[in-house]
Amino acid sequence: MNRLSKSNVDDYLQQGIHGAKQTKPDERRRFLTTIRERVVIALTQGEVMRKGVEPEVEQLMDENRKAHLFLNGNISYPYLSEYIKAAEKRGIEFTIVTNKDYDSELGLVLAHHHAIDKEEIYLGKKKPVIQTAQANKKKGFLSGFGKLFGK
Image (cartoon, rainbow, N blue to C red; front, side, top):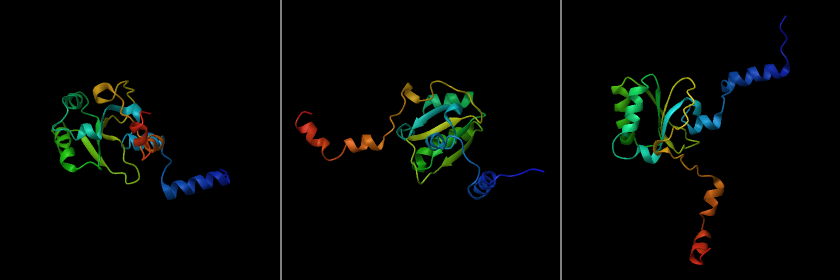
């Protein structure tokens, strides 16, 4: 006979109510529902909003036709549509991800369903700067006085 402990029953009930526990939830929010180890390339929102599709993204789509394209739904559709057309042309599935509680600095993520552990995933070879609450505080009203007085 299988015995369930109280904690097992609680875990089972919580899973039924809220769904299965997700691994690396912060990473999944940042990478538009996927995790870093699966990413082929990631673009910031600003990079996605440039005119035209980035040639490097098109090349990587050609090389990774079984990958999945995740697009940030907080970006205006006209910017996303060019990438959607590029994905459809190659038969790549895509998902527009909108998270009302968290707006990722990333606008596009091309990723596989399995780990590839690619070292360099950012366009332009620079990791985007993540704004933190502490950094935003420094940009407040008083920071202007520091510039005024040479501090």
